[in-house]
Image 1 (cartoon, rainbow, N blue to C red):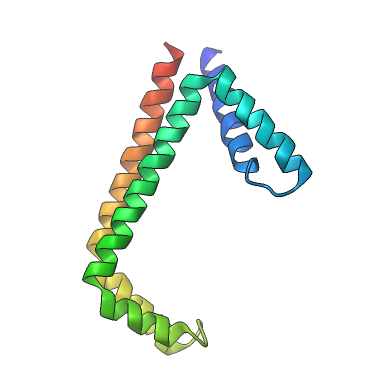
Image 2: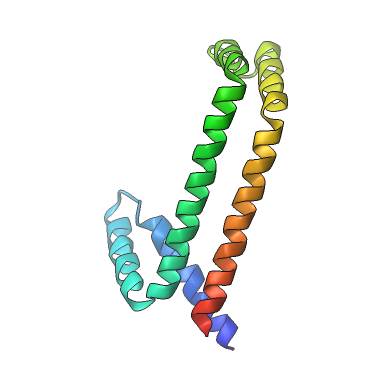
Length: 128
């Protein structure tokens, strides 16, 4: 039963945090709820904040690594896809970019997976 309660809190925090970015008045009200939930559930809020920072760091690192290693493939894909993203030339250029970035994308996926595992561990620790 305790797990269901914690899971409910986690889902509520995640949903309200996502809705906090909504431009509608309902989104603003939800944003206020999310803000208050950070005060009510500070441990879980910290877990989500840490996970978000972790994922952002992984993304920034991956983008930098791919830009450094695949600059010509990026330029080719940008050029080939500028007018028609469904063209054979675009698909070919994206495929070449994907091949160039393969190891960096795998590193990124692994880092994001670690972020998710850390989130689960953090949330479990909040229960205790």
